[in-house]
Structures are given as structure tokens and as C-alpha cells.
Length: 204
View (cartoon, rainbow, N blue to C red):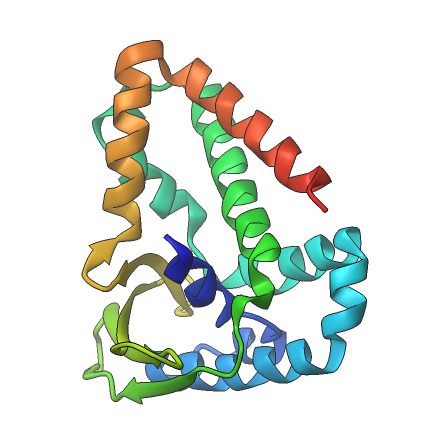
């Protein structure tokens, strides 16, 4: 899912915006995209040569905008209910780390593709929203990217799913992880994610 990397890249360098609960979800996406692309252009060589700095940067700028707890519950589905507290905590941590490090290793795939935004139709009192964007590659059709967001307890919008060209991030992981749990159990899945995260951490 190469498009996932591009989608995740659009959510960075936005801590000033995160402090506000009044930013509409479509404006949040647009403003944060502009900021992260500016930072990428300014620091590309430094970030490419310093993997640890890249991971730290991603850890700081991506985490506030994703509801990893909600995502983890949706990804595990019925297996979340049967998992114990330790397994839930371990899975959420490893899943979060995987997304962050996957994002980091693919951060530089963006090469100036055009991004368009559609206004979100959010009414007063709504606690969920979908932000629709399109990314136009240099060749080929535009790729639709739909962000599913929900308000947290503080009224801030946070992403809990992304649909990439019609494919749900949550559904995609739920399918593959569900098979893994069925075959080997949740502890084996957690160990596999931990190993993958270690590989990504040391990837040059």
C-alpha cells in the first residue's frame, strides 16, 4: 500500500493546530499538508542522512493526529474483546510504532504530486467527519484519499481510518492480522510486529 505512506506523510508538523479544537477537519488536513511539505523540502537531505532524527520527528508530529487506541480496537475486531489488558497495550504500542516507522521509511516518496481537497460537510454537533482528498501522480489517474476522523474527549479531530482508492486501512490490517491470530495467536502477532519494527528501525 504505497499510497498509505503518502497519506501518512500529509499529517505532520502541526503542533500549533493541534492545540485548537475549532479547526474544521478539511482545513486541518490542508493546513497540515502545506506545513509538512514545506518542512520536507527544507530538511530532506538532513532527514535522509539521520534516521534517528527522522523517527523522532515523525514520532512528535504524527502521533497527536491519530487515535491509535480506536484504530487498534477496529483492527483487531472481535480479537480485541478476547485479548487481556497486557496484550491490548502491547498490540497498540507495536501497531503505532509500525505505522510511524513505515511512514518514516517512505517519507521521501512525495515528489511534488498535486493535491486537491473537497470541502467536508460537517454540521454543528457532529463528532465524525470524512475529509476527501485526491493526489494526482505525474502519470496516471488521481488517487482518492478519504480520512475518517472523530472528535476526542477534548473536541479535537483525530484520524481513525483512511480509505485509499476505496481500500480501508483498518479493514486491510484487520484481514491480515485476523488470519495471523487465527493461525498462531495474538502473542505471535505482537512478536511479529515487534520484529518488523526493529527491522525498520535499523533499515538504512
